[in-house]
Amino acid sequence: MLDAVMTLIMDAPFAKRWGRPWVATAMVMLCFLLSLPHCTQFGYYFMDGIDRWINNIGLVFVVWAECVGATTLYRYRDVVGQVGMLSWAMYNGGFLGGQLLGITIGHTVTPWAGAIAGFVVYFIGLAASLLLAKTPDAYGGPKLMTKNKLMSVFYYNAFYSGNMLRHDLNSVIGVGKNWSLPFIWAPMLRYVSGPILAIIFSLAYPTFEEVKNDPLHIVGFIVAHCLLLWIVIGYIFPRWFDVFIAHERREDWKQPYAPNIMRGTTDGQEIGNNEAAVSSGTSSKE
Image (cartoon, rainbow, N blue to C red):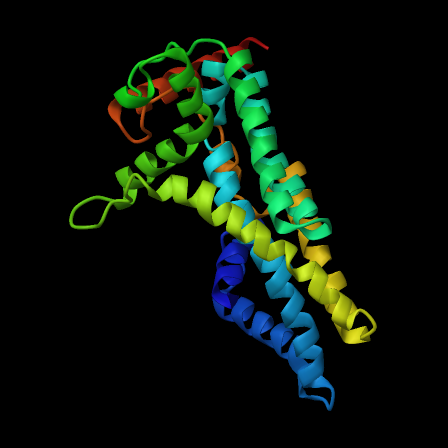
């Protein structure tokens, strides 16, 4: 983890003239100073109070956000262009709302009631997304999932982002003798790992009742939620992190609208170049 943070700093524009040994020394000294409380008489209890809630709340939330976000937001412009923003929003609202409402009812009423409520909300969102969607017109999707409008809309909302992420990753890492990611990888991330992590995340709050009068656990609980706040702020205001990104790479997040076209292919490069040319032409006219 220390090496990852140091790499982030060394790649930042403001650290181009900084020496790696000096940065490494400063970070090791900072971590050493932060760890001094662990060497005191109450150090074990302090570490337990901080580490417990960072793992149970912060770490689990981060992994859940990665699993769900990567398979929901990746190339979402393609999905919105095919089925419409309303359909995309209704499906994902039902998916995320089902998790939230199901877990809430599961803790306040009974687990069975929570499971039923979660699935009901999900299927309501699914039905609404199918009824409110426009007919997809892009070619190149899986034949089994694009036989008619309903199947095609369901594919784009439920599986497209994760499936294209798998294809794009395989074009980079699945070359030569490297293993390729299987087709089940993305659905497992979104529909199995995501809900399981959401349930594990929710279990942290009832356990806090047992230690809610312990000052060290209160500190750890607050620190963990500060981490959640930091993650949410980074999602809402991503440009705040531009300070760590080289100026020439700050537009790399922009992806051209190219449904069912894999990144790194000739077709994908042509589409990207054409869109870049249009953008540059528009900016020059302005």
